Image (tube, rainbow, N blue to C red; front, side, top):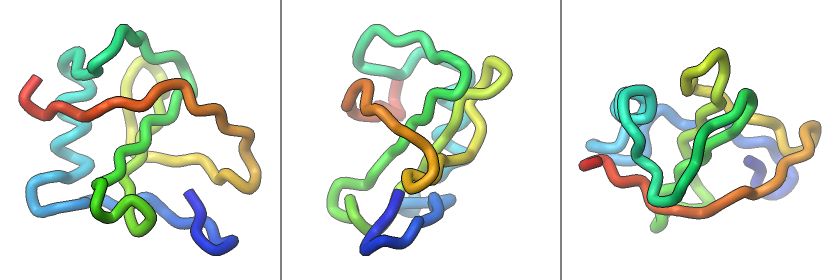
Length: 91
């Protein structure tokens, strides 16, 4: 992600109860998407906390059949939005 021409790094936590570790546990153990989706190698999942949309995000890349923390540099990598949805941590 970027802001004002600068690449921003993903955060480890967006809120007290919304961390990358907690999200990874759900992503790698159950189907938690609100649409039909099977991840493909290299897919990037970005989660924004709506009130802080510009300020912060958590990002994951699908590698070797699992989600891992990571993000792409939008200045260097060509990205395409596939779908928007809501993360349901109660899935």
